[in-house]
Image (cartoon, rainbow, N blue to C red; front, side):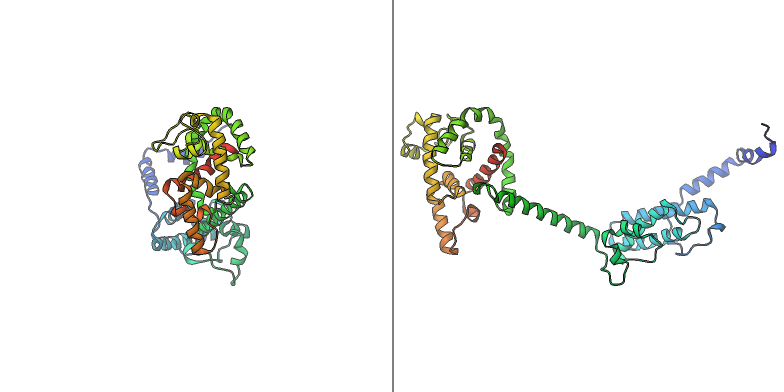
Length: 355
């Protein structure tokens, strides 16, 4: 095929060394063009009279204006930038040459979102209902009518939605706990107290070997006295399942008996360190505590930790003041700090290791 010299003439002219400086300057001016300071009119000139290069410049300027409006942190300045960007984007969308252009309509949606966050709903834009739905969500139909509710701040709506989801989660978790053993129940406001003890509970996960060795006999001793077998976790948090454990206060053995309590339940300095003997004594003691607190095992565990007399005094004070029988959570703030953490720790350990 033969190509004429005339057919190559326009392209040859563009490659001429004499034109290269001018073309380079034009390219630099286009790239450095700043965002438009003010929005163009909502109704643009006939696009047939505007060159493609000028339309490209306007699209770039509109995109910069929308981006600046979205990024602005100051509400008043964002309102002004959003209004100007919305006018620019609308002017582009109304142009016959760009009507239906996907990127331009997406730009309009972004500009409208910023605008409406400050100025309320605007229905003068030629957007399809599905595009309005994408912008406004399920309530777009109501917004299209004069009686529709005003648009709300998306951040406020998002915060309310997250709060409602968290409340529903807490309610469901509380209902699940209420369906289990009462000694593992805790109210929603105690969520954080139990969560704080889960890190401690995870440290006991390394005791599974000792659990396999000791728990069968401990569970048998508890069942013989019709006690919840989960009380075996008292030995976990008391001694880490170490029969030779001894505290700074003088408590000893698997169940950390104080000397006077150990003697009361028939343990001497040798048998208190014997797993079988101390477990039999602990089962008797726990049975007595359960009866003393009318089967409220959380109060019984609090008494196991800080003493029966202290817990009974708080129970009596609460009854005299309110006329109601208190729970551990009613007395929580009045208990010693160690006891405040003791029952949440028992719950966390039982949840983690008991399944």
